[in-house]
Image 1: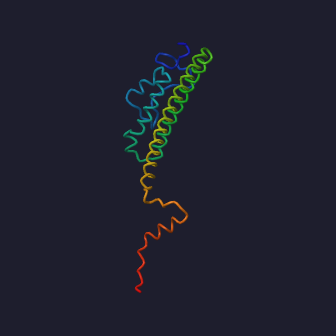
Image 2 (image 1 turned 90 degrees about the vertical axis):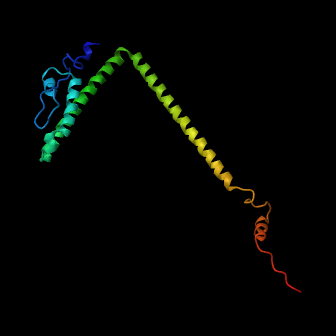
Length: 180
């Protein structure tokens, strides 16, 4: 398995067909030590780190802060970002290849990982359901409390077909009596 990890760690040759490293190009300032590291044999990890540092360096470089040509600045930043994305894709391909090799050599390991991931997802969803049930019970209690406050015995009409008339006549003032 150690021979299949070539190009990923220090002291090993990269497996990809892309040239590795090189000093920072024009309009692409690097951090101190980046150019020295880029001249030797790099791994994908070193190249990814160097391109990531170059992205930040290009954004905070004094040359860009004092520069007046916006198109040159934009081009330099775009080149740094594109290089970082290319190296990130190479790194992703490396790990996908290793994952494929592992699935062929030890398929039971892949199944164990899948089962573990499914258990974790099930546990996460179960806790989410419990959280929502707690909120549901809380709001049902609030709703019951609110609806209980609005219904008082005096607000309820008395039962019967003439309940409305009885309630309306009770609120009227008494009629004046006619003197005889």
